[in-house]
Amino acid sequence: VMDCLSKWGFERYRPETLSLAEQVTLFSGAEAIVAPHGSGLMNQIFADDAVVIELLGKKQTVTSPATEYYYAELLGHEYGCVPGNAVGPDLRADVEGLEILLKKLLGDS
Image (cartoon, rainbow, N blue to C red; front, side):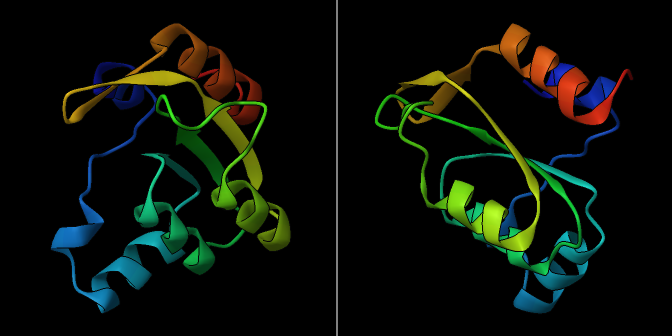
């Protein structure tokens, strides 16, 4: 996933390692957020007019969007999701699907 995202200028962050002030600063400047389903995506509340792409695991499905979708709607963010599967502690996302969604929501890289 990071090989794909780095071509689009994304950097990797772990919000749980940042202070609240650092999270607010980071997400308030975000134009796009790509993250696995989870509480870290709630930081989208600090972003202005962002694109939010949620990487879904086995328990979530594209047809039953998670809470993050509803927050994106309320905040006026564009939202997309990519299906994946949990493999141990890791998430295996559909990288081709992610690339297609990035092009759709962000334009050509």
